[in-house]
Amino acid sequence: MKKLLATMLAVLVCTVTLAQNAYYQKAVAKYKRVSSLTASATKTKHKASVAKDAVSQGTFYVKKPNKVLITFNKGKDALLMNGTNFTMTVNGRKFKTNSTTNPQFKTFQNVLESIFTGGNVDLSKNNDVEITKSGSNVILTITPVMDKKKAKRQLFTSFVLTIDSKTSELRIMRMNEKKGGYTEYRFSGYQLGAK
Image (cartoon, rainbow, N blue to C red):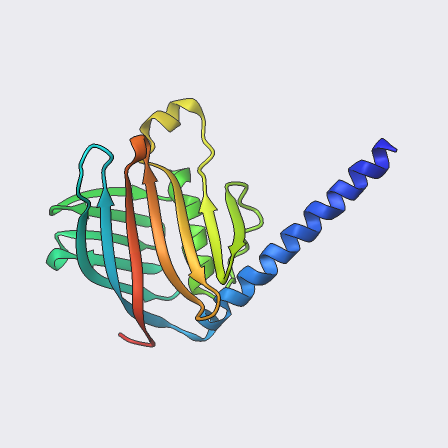
């Protein structure tokens, strides 16, 4: 009886995983044919200790397979992924990391590459990615798994990316911070194939 229950549970988990992968693959399929894109970006910076959120307007750029740039305030604030290199610019000050040495950003890189290559990067090998469906949205939640020593230094507790499955567009990218803060990027007005 225990073996039967264990087998049934394993089949159920596999079925759910396959279904999640199927609606994720469908949501990002149009990016297989796109080499570059631009979109308008709105950045909201929320700090639990501050009453009013800081909001700014900018531009979102993607060039296949692994270049992503979100820029605000004439480049004084930006998030750049160029292959395995990540650069976050805040008020003109640059903070750099590399996903080969920073596991938190390795999964983030895999997810972004998977989205913008139309699902060509297999996310099933990432234990820290959860794919769910909510209405017409596909939601990818990245919760980095790391040891306690590294967890003390991590900038973000999770990343949440929302894809509108009707339009196949990444709509929201949210980077949750410790103590309830977050940086949220909302994207609209996509132009596919734009330089």
